[in-house]
Length: 405
Ligand SMILES: Cc1ncc(COP(=O)(O)O)c(C=O)c1O
Image (cartoon, rainbow, N blue to C red; front, top):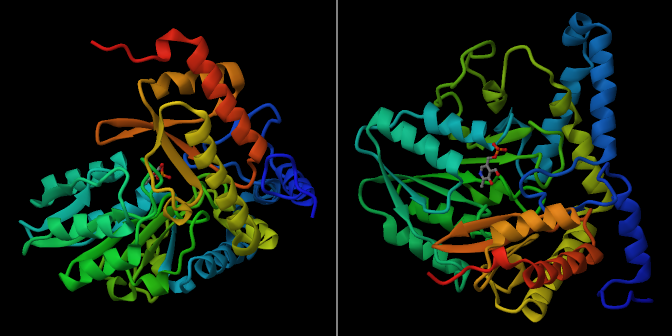
């Protein structure tokens, strides 16, 4: 095996991934390290969407009622269910995590005084939902503070355990924290919730396509995710998993057709007339990653690059500190790190303006850090480019240095 200069992959592997990158519409001059916010769909998924849209527009009424789109949507549901370790009847196809979280949040009936436990690092839209429901239904929200970085996954379980009291009935937690990219032990957190007779509701927006998931094994009550992040589906494709015991017990948030009781979670799909081509193309997006080999090829490649970025950041950027553990499984394809005395928001602006590198800076616990998303359309060279650019920006621009008051 011949290896490329500084990178721990062979020249053959590098050529393989370079070819794969060509299957995206990403500009060559853009370094895309921000797929955690929204991922680029590969050409086959987009071409499929366009092909279906053309068919749809050739005779909208016939196509709405034809057997072209409906079966493809069901095929997508089957493929998604297999990818996340459950059965198709447990999957509602929704637009995104925001919508998926609203279904149990607004649809379950809570007693006044019920307490909800969530962390200070839940996504703002998720916090808004629970704050709104709490005000409407007389619930109390309790927030726990998550350590940055935790010493071990058990720290997250311990933090939640310490926040539970006799009135706590709902635990809301993320599978992957949008702040730092920390991957949490969802099976243990679910067990903790169930040991205290609480409902376990999981925000998996960042997890599907970047960390293994087997929902049957996790045993949670609800799990929602956005397939347009790491699964690289067309935009506006998400899902909600619900345990069978909630079937027909959750009030639909939007009332329309298909409201009659049913055995399938599809009862909670987004409904009403709409463009279903994106949901119909989800199966193609999943095939794209499965055909490459998510477990055997994509995952090791991305974990390798994420590890490389952690090491490069620590070795080559003065004052850098990881805000996730060094252990590669704890952060999967996301790497987050701070730099002492540097305003990373401003650095991100220069990264884009001067280098066309997409990066983002987040904050938690009074710290600011980069949150870098490393998917298989990125390369080791992209990581080198990012590290070099950060050092050049720090050397060149005075306004990125935080001045002591
Ligand atoms: C952890 C988390 N939850 C929920 C969301 C909302 O996702 P969407 O905008 O796809 O609904 C995001 C989006 O970035 C997120 O990071």
